[in-house]
Length: 532
Image (tube, rainbow, N blue to C red; front, side, top):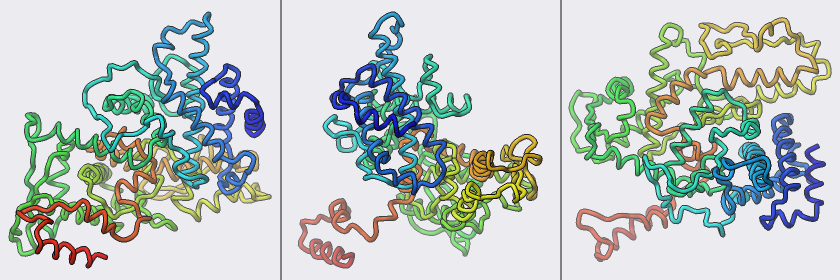
């Protein structure tokens, strides 16, 4: 069905008119139908991404570019205003066009975002294929996105995919989620939207952030943090501007937990660290930022080490996931959840202060930090071997003979509650008496993946997320995909070595030294020769 509609759209003579901003009513209806069918196909398609990307006539790269061109007009060159919908009347043709454009906007956004999720798992086109054309000035102009705080834009409101509208068709086109989560996410993204002077840019970032290059979104994120820091500067009357903490190196993690966790969101303020060495003596020096960074490096390494049992290494991918089989959780559940909150605050503080960390987290865990649900496709990045065996069940010729039922052996129930020991857990009501057959195998696979990725470790992840959001608002990190979020936290692992030229360009000389001095020129040249 999707392939047929796609070929029909390509064959239509007025497709060229579509590319010239002449969106006719018939085209809008056809594109809307195609996007809805295609979104369903992306969700219902099996997990064989390799086969999916080899469809030459129906290649996702071609579809992504076409959908991008449509969204560029709907979001940027011809943005849809709320005022058009508020005055809508079914008796006038102009208002019908506005509603059709709104439906097209929702359907195309949903399809494009679903396609981008596939691309994040297995790229099928160049990254810049997702960017809106530069001619439309979709740019932050050198990293200055005009951040504002606590000031609602006075420009005409534009339709956002996350605004709570009265149009039921629009709501039906959004990804399914609980009403409470949808309302909370809507409030968070409204806060993000109000942080930008340009309502079009705000709408763009809350709905299709991948349309803006990663580097520019990082610049926006850093501008948001810089603006937030200015609100908590030394002239703040509500919060102290700096906390001075003494930490014993021999007991770094537990002392950090005791002395910092109670600060909550006040951890955004400056922290001065004084180390106490193993002999009990105070280490000399004034913390101008370097000692705090050393403290954060050591704290992150210890806190996220598998030896602490909060996180374990995911098999086959060597990334960190929540350790749901931690035996220490049995008798101290509330303490464990409080410590996960602390771990979230520590990670948030590192991100807030632009301190890169070493730990690499699993993609499913990062997606939960972004407020997203994981699907069976994300199981590959969690446990490749388990993913391979699970997806092969769909091809098993005699799956009924395996004696499988809708159950899973786990130490966590369907709501994430810790059971104390591993036992049989039903994946659905009465699952222990429901046999897995060819007809219900796909449903079984999805339920297994949901339990492993979303139910197990959910309470710990929620606690971690609560602590993280004390420092970094949820909407800020939604500027990025899961892979991009890891880059933001740990840097780009694909970049090897040191950029000596870049380092030299940003070098700042102080304490009376200047590069123009002949002696310092020699030392400067020798210093960078060593790096080279």
